Length: 119
Ligand code: SF4
Figure 1 (cartoon, rainbow, N blue to C red):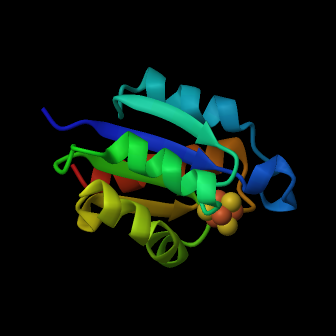
Figure 2 (cartoon, rainbow, N blue to C red):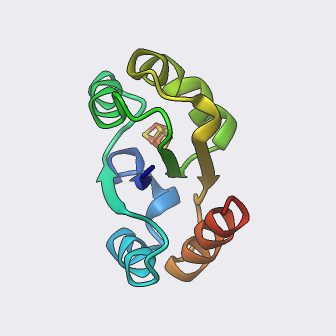
């Protein structure tokens, strides 16, 4: 069965854009609703170790869906492209959402809407 994964990326935790939310509570809210199969927080997915993380996570699971709450979704698609290709992951199964400058409640609502719309 294909897995639905959820990643939060927060610009190392130092960017003001992510200071209004509790990132762990965002993940917990999605877990409580059982909207996804797993949750992880990465400090900087667009760095080289972020590529390694994505390759390792996605390798061999071409039917998986990955939801990423972070910065602009178009930028995400570009920044994660090489890692997805190396992992053999279908880039059409990457669903990004921009949660910058949101509160915890706003971020949970935006992510929930994205996941629900792709069901
Ligand atoms: S992927 Fe986006 S949110 Fe994550 S560190 Fe890079 S710019 Fe920041």
